[in-house]
Image (cartoon, rainbow, N blue to C red; front, side, top):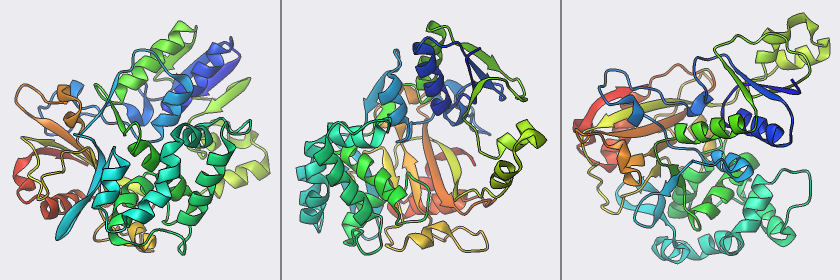
Length: 383
């Protein structure tokens, strides 16, 4: 075997496919009982909602995988009536990112600043994606656009350069929050600039049938190129070239004392960053938004400009109003609605590292602020 890939999440499968297409003999080893990692479906407890419908949306980081390997058989759609995402705001209309940049700017308090931020990038979106999603082994294909995007990442990643108008920040924050780190930072701003550009061009994609459909297409592609798949097998020390799609600390368990002392110490010093509390719901009907324009997919809360507040306090407690992202996949994929009219709602809220808090009631409270009566729609929940 030329290459062994440990872990079968989208990143691990992408690495395996690239190696297999290059003519290498590849084996993927997955310790869990199913392939897919975080993209695999998870049934919602206390619910009779069919597991085949309980498949998640895809995150922005999947864009890199799809752009790189382009697996056949994965179908996708873009949801909402011309809307990529929105942020419900208390006591005022929601901030909405339409596919149309013109319409988006027209409804913002500071639309001119938003246009200055995204206008040049939307006009050269291929160059933006080439910069963010390229393989980093060669110069980006569009250097002028790379410079424009890079300067915006640096500006939005600092406290002095980040957007400060309330509605503009509220519109940017759901995109920024896809990179789970203290805000503002270049990590967040890079994710926000890329996803904001995509929002006003192709839109945010949702795979038909859920993110497992992407995994299934990648598995089929790997098999077609001679890849070998092993599931449910504990990973021990492996010979040859090994690619790990795991947490860095997993190497301590696999290699133990055979690791060089300095490297082993570095792994032990590794500290996990902020995490998320994921809460899934089964709903009996459509959400009764205060703002009727919110026939959309993704929603973010907490427009506070102080990103530190979103990460909770030093004792590991989540903030009272955490940054929360949500997805209503059935808006563009009606197959998620079962014969009884039940449909899924996927949410997650940012929490400090190692937090064990269950934020189900907090998230329900956020929805109640934007959609009174939401609680009455909840048939089942799972955190």
